[in-house]
Length: 302
Image 1 (cartoon, rainbow, N blue to C red):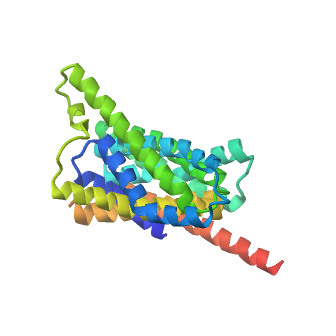
Image 2: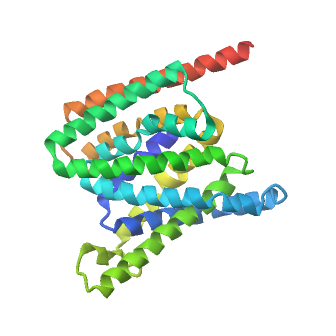
Image 3: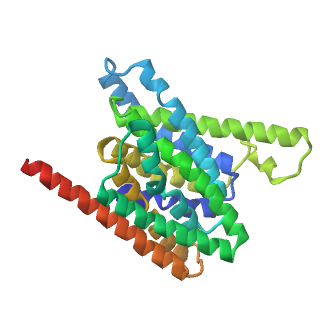
């Protein structure tokens, strides 16, 4: 739940920033990697015999998919309401079962399916409302749905790589790779715009520019709260807990985001569809947690 609340702040911080999505994603990941690097160095020294070059190589594709997820999601957040984007991208319970089956041949249990169906009902309700009320919001929702697929695969890879000796030996190179990928993309976009004499907004992707103290503070907040705290906790949870449980609990992020958007961004009060979706997703979370507790009790009795 700490990871869930931490990640829910991301959409608010992104809305407050005016930096290009590629740069924002890149700085977010690079700063997170730098902040956590002392823990990486500590564990590298302590577990040198267990940690191999193949473990470092295993962080490459998770880093690329995390970078792609951040880019598509940041763009999506700026097209739609922050609570909508957070809800859509955190509908991992609707896609996680397919990835679990494809990669591990793992089937969900009855309670997991019930929690998943409730969560899916929430996202269907909200996307249907957006389609009727705002074409611009609907475009943002589609980008968020693409980001959802990228996020699901990135999280699954944490489980695939659970044999890496330490969570810090996994997430620190991952964040640095994701950050470097996003910044390389910003360089390419900037030089393409410059070569074509384009005056479009892509010109703002120039990574060599001065930033205000306000923007720098937003970079740091985005790195510390939803990345260092939130994403690190989710990666660790994927290695230690059932994947679908993590996905269902994480899907409640949009509730916290909606409350913060009302008080911090001074948004209009959420519409009725938001509250109904909140009830559905919360019900799915409660069912998933109770099912997990019941399974633990049964295992202890055995």
